[in-house]
Image (cartoon, rainbow, N blue to C red):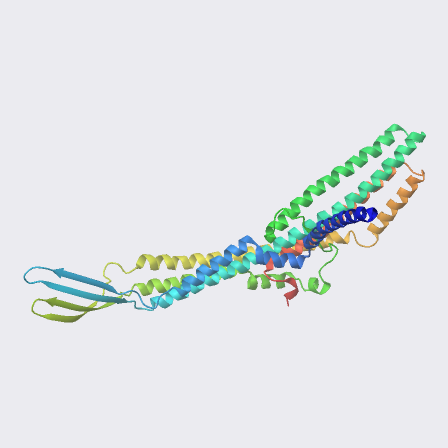
Length: 421
């Protein structure tokens, strides 16, 4: 009986400990899984949660409310006069102005054009956020790949340091060579620490674009070596890209809407030159009689014919035309620059084609094996490893530059490269 009474509390405590450990581990496992994200999901979240885009959504609500708030009729005006005394009398006047020249219709068209401009602003901002997410995503993926490689190098350098220490104790190498291995290890550790800092900054940038908690330890899932399809790249000619950019750039569409807006404002200014007609009903009551009548009034446009507003709007039309012509040239320049950047990025990747990286990796493995067997010097291994690191890092940089160039080109064209006919 004593054994049974002693065993049950121990079993209960052990069960509680296991349950506690499982409860601690499960959330962390789910947290790690949630922090892994692909490019498509990152863009989707950013388009939904980005603070800047959400602010524009609120501006759209304001612009839509302005369209809906343009009243059909203005408010009537009520006037009354009362005079006391022996011949007391009271006058009552109800007047209602009516706009002529279709002014309300012009104001509605102006409000709808402004709503279109905000919609275009949202589309433009969404494209910018998409481009920024792609660049931030591949920057984080680049740092992840570099950090993974740097940590592997640290492990190899630790092995080199241990082998060098063993040979030094055996009297096979000098203290200088043993210290050289330790120095090289410290250099690899510094590189890994630098990349860890860059990793946090890259995570911060992506989290900010996604509207996510900034301290989230984000892990992106993707492949730097994945490239655009040959069919897509084959149809990317300068003439095609220029045509697509001039047809799809939302900032150019916004300037074109400015032209429509100015035209409607000019029509409104000319319509406002037509005086409003006021129609009123009169009622007068005195001690001995009641009288009723009708009143019509219209201002005479003798001194103010709204010329200031009309002239200013006509001048704005010239400004809009000049802005569009200048911006179209700027778009063409941006397309050419982005196209050349992509061409350069593709050429840089050609240098790493073939078996060059594979041969470099095999040479490094052979040199490490020879060093472990004592058949080569430490300095030769360090030189080979430095060349390997330099080449691999440069290859990763070239891959990231390629993806960033694609994102930039897609942004200046204003549409997906796959959708180009």
